[in-house]
Amino acid sequence: MFARAGAAVVLAARGGDALREVASEIHAAGGNVRVVIADVSRIEEVEKLGDEAIEAFGRIDTWVNNAGIDQWARFVDHTIEEMNQIVATNLLGTMYGARAALSRMQDAGTIINIGSVESERAMPLQSVYAASKHAVKGFTAALRMELEHDRSPVDVVLIMPTFIDTPLYEHSGAKLGGVEPRPVPPVYAPAAVAEAIVFAAQHPGKEIVIGGSGKAFEVLDRFLPNLVEQAMAVGGAMFKLQRSRRPKIVPSNVFHSSEDYRVSGGYPRLERSQYTRWIEQRPAIKRALFVAAAAVAVTTLLRRFGRTPGP
Image (cartoon, rainbow, N blue to C red; front, side, top):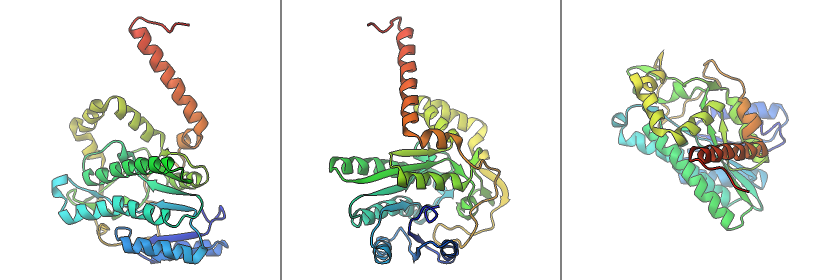
């Protein structure tokens, strides 16, 4: 999508084969692309990535911190090494990327960090992943405020996907009794996230939630957190929903890259999030809805306490 929009693209990941497959598609379409093998949990490799981007194209306008790993397991079943690697990739990798981008962006630019619906609401069996994504949200907000204070022309955007149909669930670590984890419906296509990322590069804002269900979850959790936790815990509902019937065959990618060209994980999905496209990606509409909701809330409270607004 970036290449089709006219951008020169630098692709980075731990494994090279899948990257070269994507690069060949971009080349075939007439785009410019550079492949860099890099593990974002290693600061020296992220710095090398930044240097190669400058060497290849002379500048960096957009930097997307998208690398992430997960492991479905009870907290006590994670090893120390697994916890360290998940946090190092998801959180420190995002920080390293932001640092590399900021030191190389010349005039203005956009840093896009990929959080999750779990940046807002944690779920059982994903304690370490949820902790890392909560931290990504906090880091993004703090960095944004510092840049605004310094009147920096660099924007920082947080993308928070709901459950997405990717091979993540097959590749991830899992200690679920021999089965793979699975996404909780409704599930959205990867293109919905890619579309939002490209949009954010061209129309900087603060946050974009992918999926109306994710936004509903966020709002519910904000106002009724105990009810949300109770709903997930009743009968072990959220434990059951996250377990598939697929046997866990593919090795965990927590420490090693999974060379896989697939984009889809093969789950039933919605191709687009109409909520994201028509509300999250339209700041004016989003603000108007927020103001309207706030007005309704204030009016309801005033009526509840027997008062109406004066002139």
